[in-house]
Length: 130
Image (cartoon, rainbow, N blue to C red; front, side, top):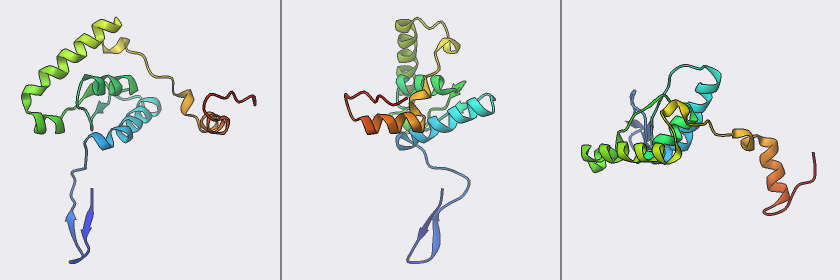
């Protein structure tokens, strides 16, 4: 991350650390999925994990493990068991024996041509073009 103090023309934020949190989650999910699809190496998902639903999103997107940080700074370490219990409940409710059995989302709907056809057709209208 980087920022400049325009009054002094000096860096006011910089170094090797990045910026994270809930606002970066959509970007992180995209990066995790791209690495999963293109490189196929084990991935740690992070940025924006608040509860078990965020953990599931990262796992379904391709992460093998997740990192939880910002929420623990806000809520404290006592929050971590809530995330774990929520994940266990979710897996039981959906019949997932382990994280490997969670499905990968169908991202065909995110292809630019599909998004464009959907936008042109408008809500509730069927696009008849092939």
